[in-house]
Image 1: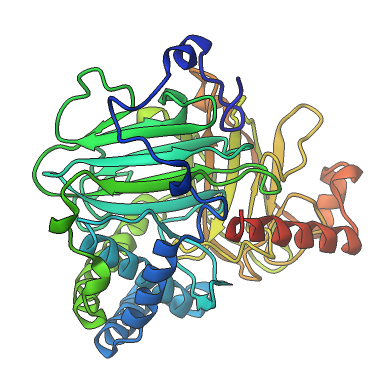
Image 2: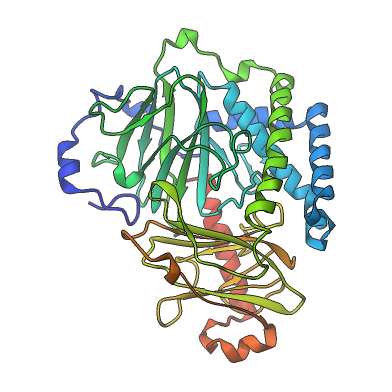
Amino acid sequence: MRLLGVLVLGVSLLAASTSFASECRPLSPGEIPAGSALATPGQGALEELALRVRAQPRFQAEVRRVEALYAADAQGATITGKATIQRAADAIAQAAIYYAISEAGVQRPVALWVSNAPHEWMGRQMPRSGYGIDNPDNVYRQAMLDGGSRYEIHGRVRRPGPVEQHFQIMGGIPGLGPMTAEGGDLPAQIRSDQLAIEANGDFCISIDAAPANGRRNHLQLPGRGTYLLVVRDLFTDWNTQKPVWLDIRRVEDEATQRDALALDAETIAGRAVEILSGIAPYWVDYDNRFVFTKPVNQVTAPRVRPAGRGLSMGGHFDLAPGEALLVTVDALGAGSLGFQLTDPWGVAYEYVGRSSSLNNAQARPNGDGTYTFVISATDPGVHNWLDPEGFGAGMFAIRWQVLPGAVSPERAIREVSVQTHAALRESLPADVFVTPAERRAQLEARARAHARRLTE
């Protein structure tokens, strides 16, 4: 049986799975809505709260301080860095608000969709949220958990589901702890190919401080403290794949639970200010340490990520007008190969109606199965154009995920070069080029595909 896109769960595992009653309270049919997996009542209520927090004067003052921090950094003196300060500060500020709201709701968690493009739904206009080279192929959801409590995550896969779904417990909010390549401690993780999932797509994950003790789907919390749950639904085909429906419940007497909505926006704004004042300088330092120390316009072999999350590499580009950075990569058999661009502060360039990211379902492969991506401030007329929103500089990430066992990272990068647009016509085959009409069709289809996330 094929579940979650390209992932296949073993027949014996599914045969052994008859009920989750011994591990989680079963849900009644009425508890699983038929509508959107993301436009939930909890999402709507917390987004409304987020807008009220964002409007607080003390929070807006902190956003202005972040803009000053960026302006004082070396990137703030560059043309692109200076021009993107406000959008980047606003995006990480929105992320800080979501962290504060999740933290306030630790006793009644909601799987809150975060790190997304500006969008209008449920009667409100929501701003951009993101940082840290966020990946447009992911639907990111989060919740804060109390290490002394017990939780259940109920899920239902609506086919076709994502290529992979990943559940990760982090030691805290990334940027408020130690600086690591992954942004913090990762005490527990589980992937969809490790889950027991019912034939109808239902599953349940137990979360508490005890060992699994035979529980099939379990995440162990380290103990007392507050921890961040991050869930990533990874897409390749934006046209068909659907986010997984999720519901997070604290297994306690509901009379003891405290609702985040009972807290006023001013109180949450105070915590959001504290979070933003920590994560903004952290990620500036992170990028200066791990990204901008690398040679510009160079792509090196990727690193192996923990917990079977594949390979990744990051770098930065700076191109003159009329120049393009060509990168040819080997997919290495990955279920998902993604190439993403961001501004110099790590916030994704516009990706709904522009192609600032491409994956192996969106890009055209070469005849030998490799992929050649082209980064340029202006359209070079190539199908696999990575568009940095008209800017000549920024950061990039390449991610190989859902890999078929052990692979050789040194094989991942085949060729890297900087060329003029005129030279592209000589170095690339004719079938990689597109007409203006084909480009418009490509981008219109992309926007329609992304809009499905708001309704599916």
